[in-house]
Image (cartoon, rainbow over the protein chains, first blue to last red):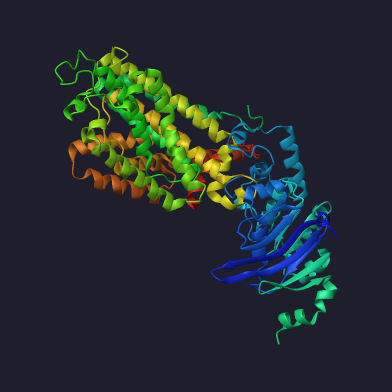
Length: 247
Length: 389
């Protein structure tokens, strides 16, 4: 298979923090349109992998190719412009701004200093913000300050901020953690809707949720790949069983 | 200009109007020229405080070295005025006529090269406007591109202030040393020491102040203003929304530097000298206090902050010279603890309380209260912002 077929190709990825290898010689490939879930026990390096892909942490060794573009040398905002969006584990939104302003700032225009000065709220921006707000169930709260939203709504808002960027690869770090059952359901519905025309990389602990959305699953353990395949496959992999259930 | 986001809200217009009435009508009519000239001096600090509102209040970048930029602007203006005051006729008794007196005292026999261009007023104005931002740009690139921020940045700006002061004092022959550049007389042949000139310069200062207020208003109303708040709150998220955060920090730092430099030039024109005591660490910190007291999220608050603290300083230091510094320190601590958004925040919360009580009173018979126009929540954004950071 040529590299072209993958939206994301991670090869030999290693990061070392003062000698401790949080991610160790990891390779995996994500296809166009695939929903890949990364699971693994605490400290397996799941979040670190996302940090490495989006440029938040610098890679020690190895390569990360997004549509054949090497990401390890790029800066965070360049990676975003290339088409990779990242949602953090704790809702990371601008709490002092309104929902509208949160989405507006994420609209992919006027990213330079002078572009930002000249930026205007034209019909296109208004329409796009409205559209996204409807998708994330927040269209009647556009003028609400973001810090007054509930935890689940904040998570949705952050997902909305990513959607408005329209990334080709969406990375979500525990999108349903801390949500109520009802919110969880709505989020699964939301994710199913938004993942149709893009690739998604999700970290999640909730196995029910994983079962609902995952095409393929990668299991990490101590920074290394333990198993990979369908959920059914990894569930029956004796190595995985041992790590999860103990000796 | 901004379809859904009016450039001036009614409250903005009232606030600017009140400030204009105070500065243009009330103060000039009620004060003699000596006092009015002092107000003009305080207003020159207001430029710095305004810059700090953008840089610190909105952008979250605390600079403890704004005196550096104030000084760069002030010295540029002073160099021009000094050259004009040092004509060969006026300095005929010196061993080298035609150079500033302090150079002659320091055995310099020719004008240093970097003084030469300051014969031109155009060059001087350009220098006032652009030397400080250029210097800020260099500091900004060196710091922000490496993601140095917060306390480290504050300490470095403070160190720069200390270095520049030492440099100015040490290079007496080039800079006038600890005395600064004094005995400034005319601007293009126009005597700036007369009462009439002081009146005119006061009004020029007020006009420039309003021009700068409008410029700041424009920046804060643009998307860049909201981005600054976003950067203050969640720098990482801004990066992952596709912005190069360092560029915005550099911009706002340079912008604040330019405002400070304009303030410095206005200071020199109105007070008639420039010295290292206005450049160093202490004045730089005082400028932060003006901004904090006035309200670090309000450009108009910064103007009032500069006026009130300096008026208090003048009165207090005349009456109790020893106590003044302690009083100022106590004032700063008190304000930060009690009203984190300064006077502007205080006024705002009073206003809001008044409005809600009036609305409640009006709602009782009317049953359905009118929804408050989007007016109120924006300010809310500002007032609540600081209590968190």
